Length: 388
Ligand code: FSX
Ligand code: SF4
Ligand code: F3S
Image 1 (tube, protein in one colour):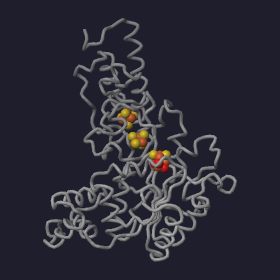
Image 2: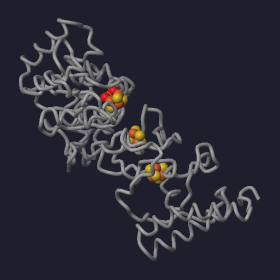
Image 3: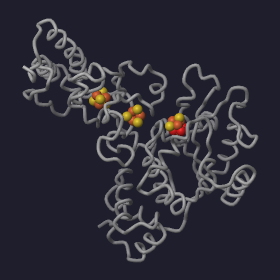
Image 4: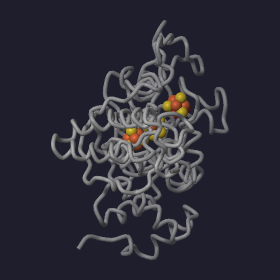
């Protein structure tokens, strides 16, 4: 039988309580949540707990370049654990220009001292894109270009993590016409690094990656873009709470229209969920409870984490269906859905088409049918059923 978190001895909990200032229940919750976020098998939370309560804190050097500091800001809003617990008790944040007390020469000396003392052991986190035009003169810290600092700090790092879309693939500073030649960390180093894209990224994806490193001494499994699979392995569209509306052909056509107010699918308003890989719908943001993510709040996903989508595609352009799968089950069509029998029958027709011709054909019909249905409704002057 595998070990469980409940097998931990009293001493472990005492250490956790005293060093992390976390009540036992909160500590159990934190370890179990991180293990679940990482998709680890049952029993792994005990290993996570052992690693987190251990006195070994990996030194972290955190660099800032072309960005808005939203990545650090979102980490500051994390509650489980709070940033001060993360900085003081789980990792040793030796250099972070926004958060450290030291400034100027003192700050640079702290960075150099930590790198020398922890050669081959520290984690380098880079936030922000790196300008490469004109030898990188658009971004300098302490007289050194971002290119020089990244190369210098990466040379002896145990692991390199690019946090945010800017560091992962260029993000917002690389938007056309990219006047500074904003580039990713991987491009500058000429080798792959772990990336946590998002503008800003979900802080728990970063925390879970750090805890994975603490627990196993390695970074988590990644896809070909360096994104941890536990967080970026599925399309947003696959886990979206509005997916049943998409499958039934019920779309918001304008911001504030009836469909929008009723929580219908935002595809026709430009939602990029069908071509963006991220766990936004399942994880949520800001420790604010369920549905707290862009689509949950009525805003189409603009693909902030996806290279070639966010800051690249026009915001209201319709998404490419990256992975066309028929739904596992078809939603009910009998209920009062507000926009009348036309939409309901569109859903029924789409379901029949789907069953007969497969997911892709169903999808194409589905998208067209809601338009046709709306047009017919206009022509016939038919009143929506719910209001009739
Ligand atoms: Fe900002 Fe970070 Fe966006 Fe970039 O997040 S939230 S511009 S990804 O590097 O600070
Ligand atoms: Fe959700 Fe967007 Fe997919 Fe609609 S298109 S189901 S709103 S992810
Ligand atoms: Fe970004 Fe879309 Fe998630 S805009 S935060 S990837 S829902």
